[in-house]
Each structure stands twice: as structure tokens, then as C-alpha cells.
Length: 298
Image (cartoon, rainbow, N blue to C red; front, side):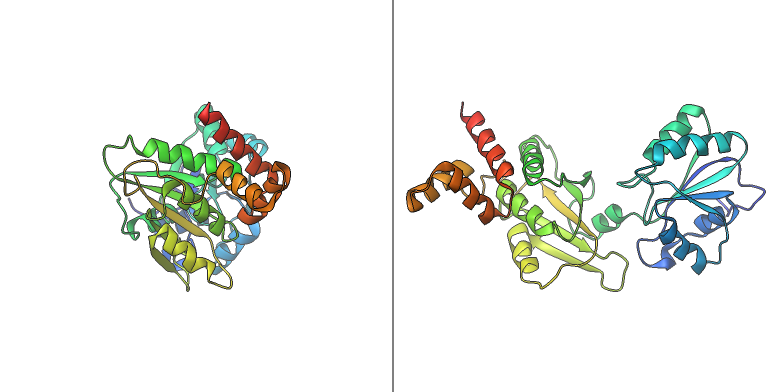
């Protein structure tokens, strides 16, 4: 398809992929749509303005983020129905993929206005094709739950489901640098230390890095660093090597509590506090995990 111009850009909602970091990854079609749209709805107008300034694009912008998307969607859909061409961008990559855009798309479709994807950069797919892990089938999770107990529960569910797979696949997870070590520790304990993973960091940027190996090895490697920077994509080979849910590399909560109590002579409440500090979790998260273990044994 040839590039759009101001006369061929029909009224509609244009989902425009923007660079992850390297501005050279913008497509010609994306530039034409951004130049000729009536407005650009942005996750963060300040971030998008840097891109527009670089390419000398003067199209007006307005915010459309997780806190105002539902309200903004009605306004933008009405504008499109009146003949407007609206471009939508996130801070980086494809809008709607772990970024605002999905609510807007749903309302546009419900209103019967055209929704036109403008393909381009996507962190998950860029990481996948260079990961060395299976690409024929993959499962995109986005971000795992932030709370430790919920995150471990989700990983346990995935490990249990992995045994049903008829062919290998890769699980793709977005993660923040300040949480990656906790997530890797949870993955190691629920999937097993030999699970093969890849970590893609700072994709398309100056310090782009791919780390490939077992979850145990890469956790130790990152833990030895003074600081972990940049957005991350964590890719996990599924099923794990043994093709069964792995036993925790750490003792279960019940077993570890019993050990702490026998060694220190403290009651369960104090043992829970100590185990929470040991794991870097909240006491309530450790207690919920203890309750899940006890429920499974009933």
C-alpha cells in the first residue's frame, strides 16, 4: 500500500505503532498518517511531542491514557463520526498492547467507525524473534500482578497448565527493572531452576542486550549488577524441561516456617515475619501462600 496523503486519509481511528527507542524504526506510512491526521491521541503528549518534533510534524495532540481513556473515547468517536481522522499512539510500540487503546478501539467498533492499524515496532515480537526460544506458538501475558502472592499464584497456574501443551511455546512477559529479580525468584521456585529463559533489555536502544540461559543463572547474573536499567521483556520456554510442574527450588512455606521455629524457638507469627524478610515479601503475602499450601493438603 502506498503512503497516505491528506486527501486519501479517510475518516477513522488509526492505531499507529511508534519506535521503541531507535527513531529509524518509524515507518513511512506511520509518518504520513501522523502528518495528515486531524489530531493525535497520545498516552503521554510530552513523550510523543519529542517524536513529532524530530520529524517536524505539527499535528495537534491530546492525551488519552489509562485514567481518561473511557471519557476521551466518546469524544474521539464523535469527532470521527463528524469526519475527523484520529491517530492513536502509545509512548512506544503498538497502542493497545499493555498500553491504552483497547477501550477506544472497542467504542469505535461499537459505533461503526473504521479502525485502521498502522503496523510497526512491538517489544514482545522483537524480543521473541531474537530470543532463541520457540516462535511457532507463543503466549503474551503482558505484566504479571505486582503483588508477590498474586504473581506467584499466576506462575503456579501457568506451570500447571504447561503440562497440557502438545508442542513447545514461549511465554512473553513485560517486566519493570525494579521487579525483575523478584519475578525471576518466583519463576525459579515455581518452574524450576533449569527453565530456559531470555531477557531482552533496552530493545532497539544504544544499550540493547539479550541475556539467554536458565532462570537460575540469569537471576544470579542480574543480582550481581549494581543496578538494572531499562524496560524488559522476559521470555520463558514452556513447558519447563521436565514437562511437568516443577517442585519449588525453595522449601514450601510450611516447611520453612517449621524449620525457623525449630531452630529459633519462636512462634508462628514471628516465624512468618522472619520468612517475609528472608523472601523480600510482605507478611500478608507469605501468610496467604501458607494458607494455599494448607488448602491443597486438605
